[in-house]
Image (cartoon, rainbow, N blue to C red):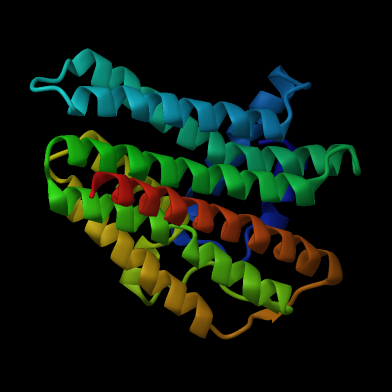
Length: 266
């Protein structure tokens, strides 16, 4: 790892703030981001985010198309799985890439707007994958699976809304309460894993989405009750206000989509 990436990494990892998984994999992720920046110097973090979002949604659609058939073609499932995992990997890289570029050429990249765009793409991935699973369960007449996927879709933004609300008020809270296993499952890395498992293994989807939705609610309460670890600056509070508005919009959109669909099916 180069000196610039190492310097960014040291500033980025803050004990008690990052989730254990992110901390454990930070060096590898930053090494990949540094390699991509050197190999493709014009590649922007937002481009990586868009590539990741498209990859996840295309891969998820391919897998769900197979899940709706009597017999799945495993080659298509494998292709879809590679796209989904590759897309989620891209999501892990865009943030470090942004910080590397910002340190190299300050002001070249608007990190605040990039953060909001990244969070929006993250939640869109989770919401749309869950809604794809809900449609598959509906077609298969699996009520538990459909309800669980819907619950996952409409709870996935809640931890982020609470975190943004707290920061907008000036409180910096820990990324995750490592003492609470259920809350840990409601954090982004765990939600990614649960989304992959629920999409890939349709027989286990109802249980996995139920666990995911429950974990999202626990993480929401945990963040609401979490003690402040510091005070957010003016710019951070402003960014948090915008993030809260975007996530609230996504939440409203997910609820409206679900309510409209249920009304049509009645």
